[in-house]
Length: 487
Ligand code: BG6
Image (cartoon, rainbow, N blue to C red):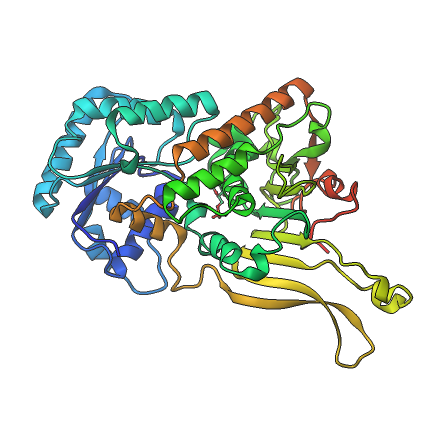
């Protein structure tokens, strides 16, 4: 349970993250009483007073309940600031101290970097002389993803942070780790003999991870065009999911042990082979329709951009457990549906018994364990059964557990529990440096391969599930995506 007596100092208070995620989540924590004695100091370059900012943010503060919005807004303060100007930090820190005194917050501060990643480093460099880090009180720092743009920049950022903060004061965000069904993967795997006993290449044919989105750039053209889907979604969210799915059982549930198991799994990934890279990875860019622009026609996107808004790939492990089991992933913008799910496809049994019974054999489908993450949560298993009329055979989806909407009105959103963890000082659901490092090393190797081979950026229809080459990724070995909302 989060407690209070804390000041959140948010660098970058007028951007998408703060307006769409942080402030509504803070309101949620306030509304449920988890946040009582607290203050938020927003630092941004717009020329606002406290009251201007309160008016600016008000339209974003929507909840299903009827929260006390005027009460909440009394805790919100604003200071105009250019984060690249060292002198602005002193004024901001002075205001922060005044707020601290007013609410009697004991000097506890959480610095939240909700700014473009290029500003992380100048902000960290300015903190020591600003007075912001003055004792007493705890100091924590929250770094939004992406943590670096590649391994060298991530390493430099990490070293810079380590000069000021201990590992347990650093919260590197991957909001996927706060999703309920992501947190459920370890229990689903290691808490059930049924699953753990068959979680290997003897029984599993392939694993599929889908993070599809219907949204486009959402005012983030500059950032997105620089990063692309691989660095925006794969290096962090998809690699987190894959490491949880592929790892061996950790020695304990302690964060260090879980991290070790995840890192060991990722280190067993086969580095992309230049000969195969364009068969194993597919890049795409969305086309437009009458209402919506194509990626290359979006504002602030260069007409010659080769940034991928879709990526699918096949990952293979150098491990006994996963010998010959491809892990497929795909993610993209402007796809048919907003869905995050994992499909674990099992090998077919020996079907000799039904050999002469075409009405049966033609309808048999593989068993698929589906972990639904968003917008529905739950577990289901595709099983072959015979209908009660005894005439028809086919596969049905047996709901195993937990099915419910992920973002129901009373369900805390991922950012709410994330903020709650940070306020509690609980780093468990935040990736540690070693996980981030090994993921970047793989992505760097992949991108270096792309640089050498200059892959085609396939165009795909808005509302599709990406370019058809992403289907071929599987069909060339007789497999197919278990989830296809377009059919
Ligand atoms: C963010 C990406 O990390 O995750 C966004 O930067 C993406 O581009 C978002 O839209 C998706 O998160 P979720 O929780 O909606 O799947």
